[in-house]
Length: 90
Image 1: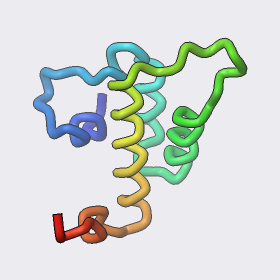
Image 2 (image 1 turned 180 degrees about the vertical axis):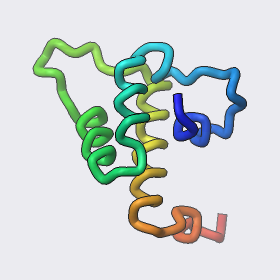
Image 3 (image 1 turned 90 degrees about the vertical axis):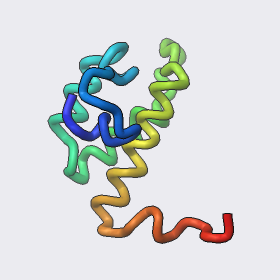
Image 4 (image 1 turned 135 degrees about the vertical axis):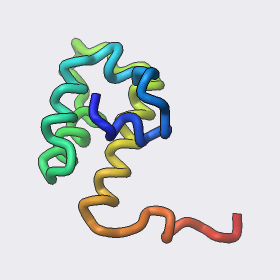
């Protein structure tokens, strides 16, 4: 997979994400769309699609990875620093 999933947890290249392992077709689509506005819509659909009652849903690890990618991409595309908005009192 491209650098996007590796950046989520700053993993080394030998570790494979839950998306890559369990859903290689989704990993391929994310790589092809990464950095484009259409990728935000794709991730949004993955995170909110109900499956029409036939879907088992994603494992928790995959949901976390998808949400991390979604947040990272939205920040990148908007040109804002996601950490600049954090609460510095913590």
